[in-house]
Each structure stands twice: as C-alpha cells, then as structure tokens.
Image (tube, rainbow, N blue to C red; front, side):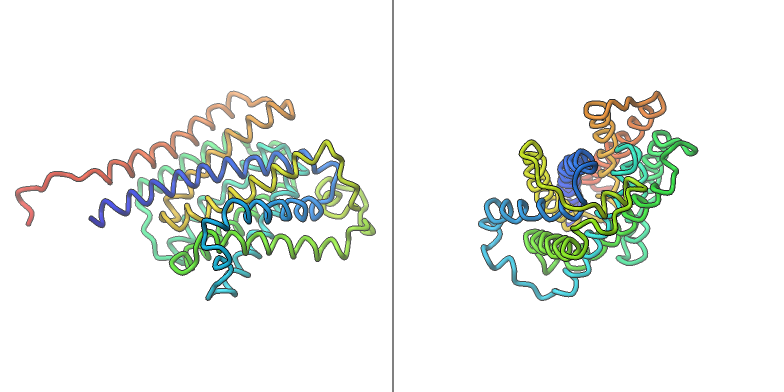
Length: 320
C-alpha cells in the first residue's frame, strides 16, 4: 500500500505545483506591468492587503477558522517568510530591469538548487532518471536564455539569488509540513509580506534615495505615487494570484518529494514567453521554441514515470 500511496501523493503535488506556477506567472506579469510607475514595496503592500482579504474569505473558513494562526513553529514561519520575501524582492527587481522571459529563465536554476538541497538537508533520494529530467529542463532554459545575450547582465544575478532563496524556503516547508497546515503557512507568509513592506515603506516611501540610474533601483527606491484606478485590477489580480499560488505551492511541497515537485515549475517558462509576446511584443526565437519543448518534455516525463511507478506489478514467482 505504501508503494502506491507515495507516487499518488507525488502526482497530486505535481499538479499543485503546476497550478501554483500559473498563479505566480500572473504575479510576474502584474509586477512587470506596474514596475515603471510604482514602488516595489508599495505594490507588495497593496497586494498583501488584498491577499489578506482573499485569504479570509476563501481559505480561512475551510482551514479551521482562527485556529489557522496557531503554530508550534513561529521561528520556522519567520525564517520561511523571510526567505520568500527576499526571494520575491530579488525576482521582482530583476523583472523590472529585464525581459520577463529572461528573468524567469534565469530563476530556473531553482529546481536544480532544490534537488541538491533536498539531498543535502532532507536526505531524499534523487535517482539518475530524475537528475536527467532536471538536466534536460535546464538545457531547455539555456536554449532560451542563450549565454552572451542581455540576460547575462548584472541584473541577471537578482533572479539567480532569488532562486537560491526560493529553494531554501522549500527546505523549511518540508521540515515543518507534518505539523503546519498549508493554510497556516500561507497566512504567515502574507503577514510577513505585509509587515516587511510596511516597514520599508515607512522609511523610504518619500523617494529620498531614488536616483533613477537603473530600472531595478528606481523600482525599489522611488516615491509612492497615488494608485490610478486603471491599475486597480492589476493589484486585485496580484492579491488573488499571490494567495492561490502560495497555498498551492505549499501543498505541492507538503505532498510530494521536493526533488520531484521542483521540475514541474518549469511550466512557468513557456507561460512567461506567452506573456512576453502578448503584452510586451517580445517574440521567441527558434532556440526558444526548442527550449519550451525540452522544458515541457522533462516535466511530462516525470509525471509519466511517477504514474508508472504507481501501477502495481504482478508478483514474480522467484520472489517471496
């Protein structure tokens, strides 16, 4: 029974991971759309307020009500929230300075980082076929990024740092998954975003440090302008997508092995290219399409193999 249950759990985790990445792709799109007008901490604060309302309306009633705030691991939640806040800041600053597909592609050193961390810190086993699937996905990313292009500017370090912090966040998730629910982990992430953005805004929201020399620095340091009514829908989208993605990705890494769930996050790459085409008129090259095929193929192979592992085999007459 155990041999069947684990693959089934892994499969459900994979679907949660892919749904979460779809939500996060909307977050990336929204951040990119607002990055030339608003300050990063202003956007994060507004998004967090919407997320708090969404959580209270759609997740809190089904997560035990106010019991969701009870935890025996406050330090772990603080550490996890700090990792994800810092990861988001780095990724969002990268999005402000780079094409969305380039930033997301560089961020995809994260599945490799997660796989390595899962072996080192969690003692999970990663077989050669999983390593091969991860490697194929990374080759696809390299085909899209193409070393030597504008993706490899100084700003490209920001998504790379975000990827490492993102992997560290998932290690904490795996450590506390048996005692903390997805709802509890989600609400503490929202509160960490809310508090940190409010504190940063309190000190620099007047724009006193903004020099306008670089898109990422300008996004971080500019003064808070009034919110235009035309941009309200983007803030609301960010709030809904942020909550949905946070809850789903928490479920993914609670249900499945970290090294198994990680490659399914590669689906963000073709989605990012789609947003680039539709909203920013950046068309993929032939290399980019080849990369999409490799990225999707690696994830689909992982899903197919996990399904095969979950199918009971007839007993061998030579075994007892």
